[in-house]
Image 1: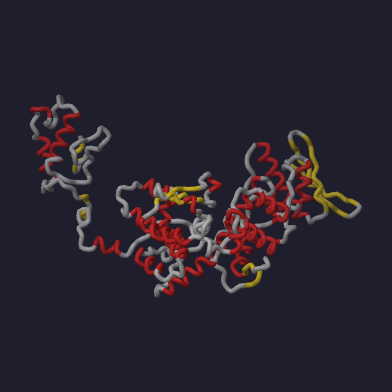
Image 2: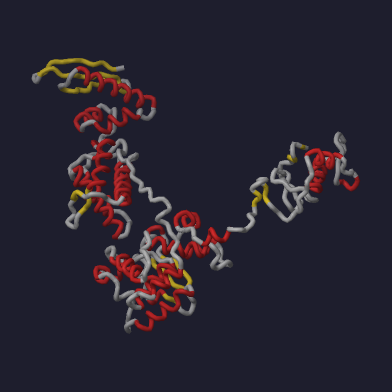
Length: 486
């Protein structure tokens, strides 16, 4: 229990809370405020003290209140041992240090730095993250929807921002505040429920036929561009992080393999993967090799962005955007319409071809290894529906009889009714140990199962029977046959 006292001081009337903390009487001086506010604080303090004595977590409203109170009151509560001492840090102090210690690529750190600048533009560098509320976090999301970062790093008003940009910004901000929560700088994460996932649906996931890519390659300006497009569509390489960092020493001509360095997955212990030299890659590779200058290191030299060329070994190159811009111009020149997400869809189209049996002797695990994803991720994000998939099933009998809801099989069907089934089982001969008679105690359960198996596999077909077509029934199979249970 606690007591609330009003006392006179030189500056006027103030309030004081007295309560028992671990057997000791402690006082918390609240200072000047109205009685209703003092009583509210007393109630929250009592709840926090009770939870601490019982070893229970704070209720959500008390935890949120402790996370939003000012440093002055929090210091008073920590001095009496009610709450731990607060670690103070501003957005400008924590986020730059957090980004610097990350084991991410330079591109990833640049993305997070831009997100940090949007936070500074809205909240300010000196903002205490513990004072940010969920309503302010929602206002920040609205700010992202109507503002865009210019080349100087400032935020300017914009008519509409891509939903994917807002989603990525909020995802990274959530990462920042999760780290603050782990460091006990905040009591709760205000961005936990503030999300803006873009709803693209499946219309952006399209299958790009190989014939269209061959048509586009006919309108490319040189051999390098033909190789770039071939590596995207027929090699499954990522847009720039893998294609532009590919060296001639990675092409193992005698083994028919290509070592693909992947800076995106390097921090997960997968710095490279090995793919075969697919048939569609042979001619573009040979053409570029014949035209390469003596001493050339990289496959792509002419069309590599200048900033990436200046980077040492291209390991820390800046992001590029002009490859896809030029690629879309080539597509238009070929008389086709540019595809949405061309890099992702070309990679996904290769995965679709491989999973659809382009090489039937290759297993799923091998295909996933070539692509650089687990089979689950590849099936979820990189498989596409082809137009001719619909034509393949037209006019063909399905393997499932939808009218009877039973699976078709090679066993001939039978028109046996329920009574005939019961009569067949009941009148089965006991001789030979394959039949039974109802009510006979000398017939084992195993022989009863064999009787049902003999009948079912002789012509009866039903998906409600717990047996297999080969006539073998396991001990765990259910022996339910149109209500006949043994």
